[in-house]
Image (cartoon, rainbow, N blue to C red):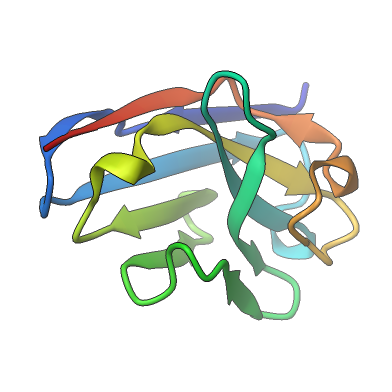
Length: 124
């Protein structure tokens, strides 16, 4: 059974940090790409970062570049999103998703599997 389980969300003050984790099971970790998305009510799901475990390439959206860092631990089959210098505008539900083909991207349609989401709230 394919599963993606996010953890690490919470409430933090502006300027603070959080680290999200996405634990992956049910398919070959080294071949996939894992993307991080976020969504606020009434808005489209936004792709903010992804990493191709297969190729090692990473991507950041302009909105998070320089503040967020994506990384992975193959032994733990986990992808992390380190979020620093958080802003109130970062408040959203954050999701990780898996692309079994290993390419990644910012369009939600490229990903077959999704986690349940974790809430991140940044207070001003």
